[in-house]
Length: 151
Length: 176
Image 1 (cartoon, chains in turn cyan, green):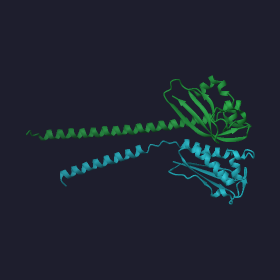
Image 2 (cartoon, chains in turn blue, green; image 1 turned 90 degrees about the horizontal axis):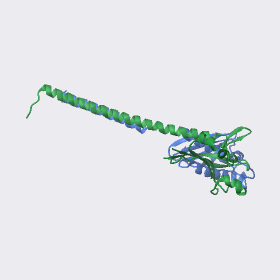
Image 3 (cartoon, each protein chain N blue to C red; image 1 turned 45 degrees about the vertical axis):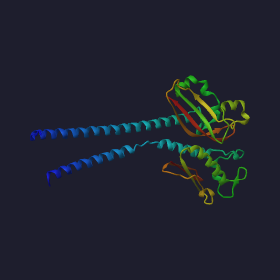
Image 4 (cartoon, rainbow over the protein chains, first blue to last red; image 1 turned 180 degrees about the vertical axis):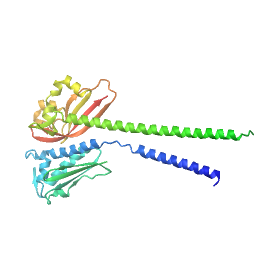
């Protein structure tokens, strides 16, 4: 191998090293982690609590909160609070609360009722679009509600 | 044309090599500094978020506003406590506790008319709480403040006299 060729190989090695170093730097600086997991986790847990405690205005006389309505909603034909189907009541009220409280995020709420025949088992409110940010669930003896927030 | 001796050529080569090494060193220091700076900025953002969370959690769990039933605390805001003027009556004490901040609660759902709920509670209770949407708990803006940072979190609002819950938002304005 000629001396000139050796020099060129040396130069190439330096260039490759440079490129690798720059690539590592860019990768590290691009991965700036604005870790707001704690904030989001508090937010999603607050939202679930708010939903479960909320008293729909149609149910003021009966004094039912959403948690109570979900518990009662074991069949598609069950109506309450002025003859409204429980599934429709939950869907409308919970959608409104989620729309107001989640702001820029998209959301998805699903239910797992202990009673198989419950119409809530097939109910999905919202549609999570974009990468998943955080999720949390609210569990009672009768059901489990799972909320996902995406952006 | 001037001809250089072999030693001069060697010297020049060494000077060029040193120059290149220095350039590489300076570039490396520059990039490291940039990376270090950006990581510090990231930490500042994280600490700021943590501070806001602590502030929100501390205010939410303060006995002046949090719901409680038979001394057991619940995750909601008691609007009856908001309607009393506990904080206003002890403003000097709370100025030291909260500093330069405005703390308010806004009713988001169901829809209600705009207005101060403390006033409506006293003067128009018949239509309360659908005739108002805001409780100002504490208001102490910094004179000539440079910037105002707003943090908020959704909360559950409890109306003990009506025994029902609405949806609201706790808003804290921090003056700097």
